[in-house]
Length: 439
Image (cartoon, helix red, strand yellow):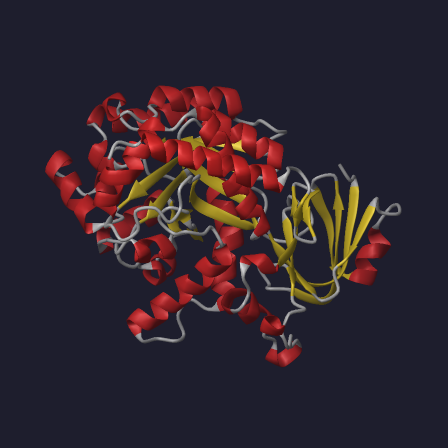
C-alpha cells in the first residue's frame, strides 16, 4: 500500500460545509486519511517527505467517493423486467434468493463491486444472502462495504436473524475496519412480529445499525396493514427499529406523521429514484424529507430492479424526476444531489468520509473532464462544474478510485482483481442459478 499519496492540479470539490472548490487543487494522503486539502502549492508545502506516489489530475475533478446507501448484490440484471414490485419479488427475487449458493454470491458480489468501483462508488451498504461470502469479495476487491442479511423468518427460506448474527460476529470490523455490518430486514409484509421484535434486540446486542425496506409500494402498505394492522414505517417506529443507526430504504409513500417519525427518531433515508420508477412504485418525497431535516442519501437498489449501479445516473434522475413531477426547476440542485451521494450517505453509515477535508478517510474519485460531453469546464462566477458532475457525467467518466488511501482503479483499470475472470465467473454463476429456478 502506498503510504503517502499526492493528488495535484485537480479541480477539488470538497463538499465541505463551506462548499469550497479549489481550481488548482491538491490532496495529500497519508496511510488511509486525508492530511491536507487546498491549492496544490500549499498542499505540497505541507508534505513532510516526497510522496510515494503522485497523481497529476489536471483536467479532472476530485470528488469524495460516492456512497451507495441502499445496495443489493445482484446476479441477473435485465431478467423479468416489467413487473410490479410484489410480482417481481414473488416470481423472481425470492425464488432466486432461496436457491443461490454461497460461491455464486461471491462472484455476483465481486462483479457488482467491480461495477461500483468503476462508476465511482467507494462504499456500498449491501443487503443480500450468504453475506460472509460477499464480505470476502469486498475485502479482495478493496471496496468499503456495510453488510447485512436479506433476513426474514426461517419459513421464508431466506437468511435469518441467526445468519445475521453470524455475519456480525465473523465480519464486523474485517479488512482493518473496511467492512462493517448491520442487521438487515427484507420486507415487513413477510416478517412476523417475533422476527421484527428481534431486530432491534440483535442490533443493540452487537452495537450495530439496521438496514430496512419501508413504504416502498402501495401494495406493501396494504399487505402490512392486513398482516400487522399498521403501515410498515409506523410499525418500525413503534417497535423501536427506527433510530440514528437505522437506514430506511425507499420511503416512497409517507404521511406527514411518518415524515415526523423519521425526523424525531433520527433515521436516515435512502432515496432510490431509479428502481422506484422502473418498478412503478412512485417517487419518494425527498424535498419534504430534506425540508423536515431528515438525512437523505442515495441508493441504486439493485441491478435487477435498476439495471445499473451508476450513482451519477441516480443523481441526475433523482433531481429531474422531482422537477418534472412538480413542474419546479429549482428542486434538488446539483450541490444537494452531490451532498446526498457523498456526505449524507457517509453520515447515515457512521463513516468519517464523504467530504474532502483533513482527518477524513481517503475515499476519493477522479472524474475525467477531458471529453466533449464535459466540455467546456467553466470556473468562477459562471462555474458549471457541479452541474457537469450531476447532469452530464456518467460512471465511466471516473478515471481513478481511491478507497481507504489505496488506489484500486487507475486509468479505468481495476488493480485488485482480474476483471475478465470476474465477468466470466459471474456469467457462469448467473446461468447456473437461472437453470435451477422452476418454470
